[in-house]
Image 1 (cartoon, rainbow, N blue to C red):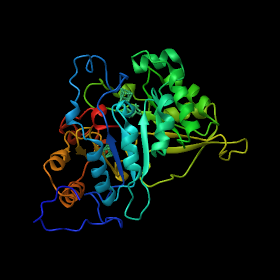
Image 2: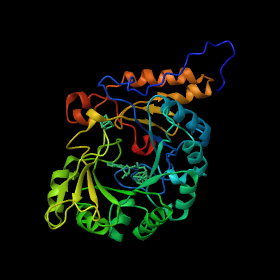
Image 3: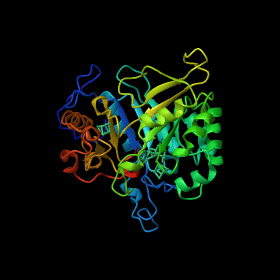
Length: 366
Ligand code: SAM
Ligand code: SF4
Ligand code: SF4
């Protein structure tokens, strides 16, 4: 137990297994994304444009970041409130020094049923070739790698730091060898910038056991100069794919799944598992707020209830102020119960326009 003053009454932690904890729209808390750093070695134009995230950008000082012990303590309390999946993200999570140490601690956590958490990580892949084995040894289960093009010149333009695509592909191969699967690859599609890469990407990953997911370019943050005409709607993307490769719809694998799954089909029109599948994440054109069971913990310990939220709830202040576990667990439950966020459903309406400015994705974690 952490820092509990002797005289304080003990309130038992509530076991929320049976879905007792639900937000204002009846959504349970299942998934926690933890941003472990706000820094990144890439400057993807849709996320951390160079003009804004330049040399003088004030990134968080180390003391502001949650320590591994603080993250693990919060993760344990979130698990008690129903979270069974944790995704480490950022910024670029592999830039956080000795991340394996955090993974070891998180891998030791259990749900109230005694099951390990589904522990995963989203990375730009640049350090994966070096780190895959150590991550696996520390207890990481699988990875999602972001990759926006197969063509080297297009990829270098997307990451805007001239990073070669071959090194990310080496990272994916290393992750596969280390057993960090099933691997997913995320491609953000910007019309007019990398949409010519959709088919080469689909051809490359077909039959590899890696699920490629296409993500609609989103209006996250307030610095990427987002425009609706640069969004390529998933329906249009699907039509382009189906013109070349037969695809059949697949059932969702988990409640609240963000990706609509399509399987590569064989000559008889049935899904061919060996050829694999693709996913469509239609964050803009087909909102999935109704089943959104995700909370986000920022690098400095603020709890955000939506990717498009304007503010978070300061859990670090509670941690560092000596609050006992029960008080923090209670705060998490209270905050979640009050949640009514559904930005993507409201996008384009006055209610969405009236909201606070969005925080940046590199800070809150994607
Ligand atoms: N740096 C890691 C990476 O790129 O995988 C993790 C953090 S990144 C913010 C998480 C995910 O958010 C990545 O897959 C990235 O492509 C996606 N992302 C960032 N900005 C986006 C935007 N404007 N629209 C859609 N997806 C975005
Ligand atoms: Fe970095 Fe990931 Fe954002 Fe690209 S998407 S700038 S890799 S945090
Ligand atoms: Fe969840 Fe917010 Fe995205 Fe809706 S807009 S799916 S509530 S993160």
